[in-house]
Image 1 (cartoon, one colour):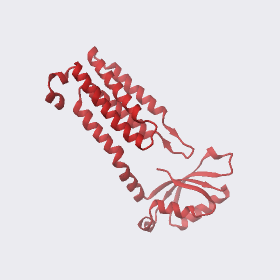
Image 2 (cartoon, rainbow, N blue to C red):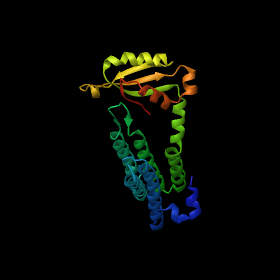
Image 3 (tube, rainbow, N blue to C red):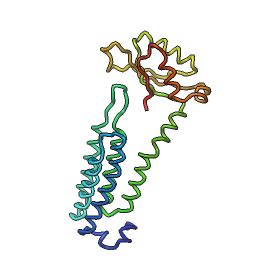
Image 4 (spheres, one colour):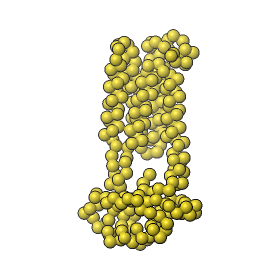
Length: 234
């Protein structure tokens, strides 16, 4: 299947020429810039330069593969594997048992695929792809937050003044019509005065969700004097 935009532009856009090279690199620069700006504006480590470099680098790899005309797209495959490895190594688990870097890793991987698509002359795929990825990053965040607020499950990071207060906390949770389904001790705080847990809570009482949002429940629990810190893990 030939690319619709390449067909519209003519033979020069389908082949690797000086003009198609400039067009493909410009599109890669634009796509990487848009993605990088969106990520950088939200304070993520992988920002403008990272996404631009990945987009341009994978586009170049795809064009070199086309010039070499091998049966196997060696540089393109190697680029995807390299980005996947770099992204995987950036995924960490924080002291609050939160997985960090997963969305960034997927974003970098998606950018490498889009860069290869544009570099191989798939202008339509690249343009539609970058629009959809930006929609996922920019617009679906609020929707995801809304759905979490409506969820009957909460995963919280809890810091108590001492482990003796855990029984008090579980009793309070039951009185509020909620159920604790899992408690995990956070060993990162083992040598401190704090007792830190990651707790899964089920909001079985329908009235809890009817009249209270997750943030309201968190604020109410924070009023307990033996709780040092409490937040919902998203």
